[in-house]
Amino acid sequence: MLITLETHVRVPAKINLHLAVGPLRDDRYHEITTIFHTVSLFDDVTVVTTDENGRLGHPAGARHSRVRLSHNAGPEVPGDGSNLMVRAATALIAHVGYTAVPDSLAVGEQEDWPLLDLGVCKQIPVAAGMAGGSADAAGTLLALNRHWDLHLSLDTLASIGATLGADVPFCLYGGTALGTGTGSDVVPVATRSVFHFVAGTSNLSLATPAVYAAFDQLPPPQPHPVDEVLQAVTAGDVARLAEAMSNDLEPAAIALRPEIAHQLKAMERAGALRAMVSGSGPTILGLAEDAGHAQTIAQECAPLFKSTHVISSTLSGPYWPNQL
Ligand code: ATP
Image (cartoon, rainbow, N blue to C red; front, side):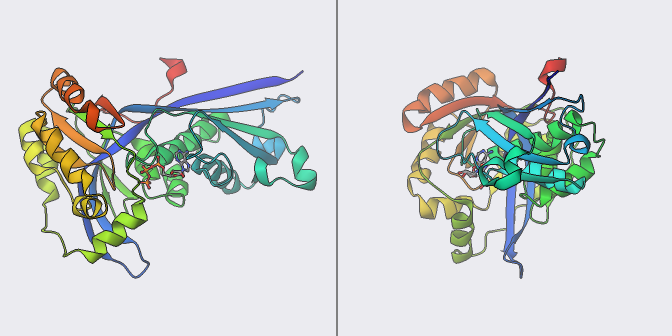
């Protein structure tokens, strides 16, 4: 008898309330100090295995897997072995001592290996500076850990995640956290404060490496103390957060796409307490007083953006929607 097992996890997008970028290191990465914060835009990640012998596709039963991915996004999201979800699954399977190959690369006897089916229903805007791919990779690690009862700790998943991308460890934990190093060294910040934002996405293409390269050409930024943001967040003080929020990559994003300066001004004219580029852009974040205020700003700004989203802090990270 064939038995199908499905595990489903919902993963939030992240924004950076503070992003201070240091000089280029010898390994070509920048040292950063950031405050990560998860917000209410979600991708739904599923893993599915079908098994004849009751091992439910456990790698101890299969030993070898073919990893296949389906998603609801356009061609800008790869469906092959370069997708961060497929890379996360193969890295996890290698960590526990078994072998996996992306289905698109399977040859010869690999074509008969049992299938591990990954799926993602994306709502997090793609290539928007909101860590959609990293959130999906984190969701894949969490879902497989549960699907196969691997009992790996979050810290172990984070060390696997760090090999995939600097934002993946934070995406495993969610909530609010201080990130240092390349962003992959994460310390949670205890807070129950909820803030409200508008996220305005655009069609301007801005690859993260290009933004960092532009940053290197500009004069070094003025230092912005991270403590101010931490205090504003823990106090739940929206006016103080509006003063303290900063993103060192914003001038570089504007240098590459001058339209961003216009969008920032428009968001503030519409009433945002503060408008700022999200991560490496091109998404613009507007900080609002409350949810109603965010709705008003979003309506006013809508003509300027590809899409506008009214979002708020999620307080926690990925969760298991089947169990609510
Ligand atoms: P980053 O800031 O990490 O560069 P981002 O948050 O701006 O990324 P993502 O939505 O993660 O944006 O997409 C960046 C690129 O990563 C996409 O253009 C796509 O080619 C690739 N990618 C790989 N896996 C995924 C995934 N699961 N979802 C979205 N994009 C993915």
